[in-house]
Image (cartoon, rainbow, N blue to C red):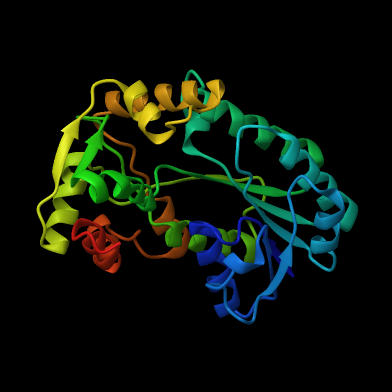
Length: 289
């Protein structure tokens, strides 16, 4: 059996669906069962917290593989998840890390994930690290300004990113969880094309048939204040500011062939992802949601 943490998130939901389609026994760990409505009926749903050893130990019973997604910036949840994994006999872990662990010098986001990777190494449980770049679903963060003012904030200017569909991350995770030969490997995952925010917005605009304007933001601090009007934890705010500055300076954009190499098809294009999610953007721009 495979336990999937973060099962109601963008990657987790896709992963549960793909594993079930593959015929695997899956237990989806969720914090709130009412949010598990998109999960397939064939998946077993367990309610628990990553920081609660007793609920994790119960959720892991009978499982031998674990997909580990740890939110936040603290390590308590990762340590508890690994303790439960050792106690219950988990034999393989696939951890959702970040491409930021390969950046020199390590940014805060990369450092947090690197430290968690080290905790997993120290556990002695064979593991695979998935290190994706930005997600296509990150563009959903634009919904608020689109809804309120009809524009998108652009703090990265000439910076480019090859956004990846969470479904492609899930497809790689499925391979790593169900096939041999991936223990001890770290995979950097990206989409197929490196685009600026302006190019991303132009594609969305063309797909939904609506004009979307862009507001350039030179200060990443302004974006953080907008996203967290009540204030973000200082360490998180600093990490976001540094991350946005790094993205602005990356005018080439990292692209890897890892997805193609592992699942024998190219990653989904940004346009294709936009076409599949056009209604969500169109409703917001039209003021219907």
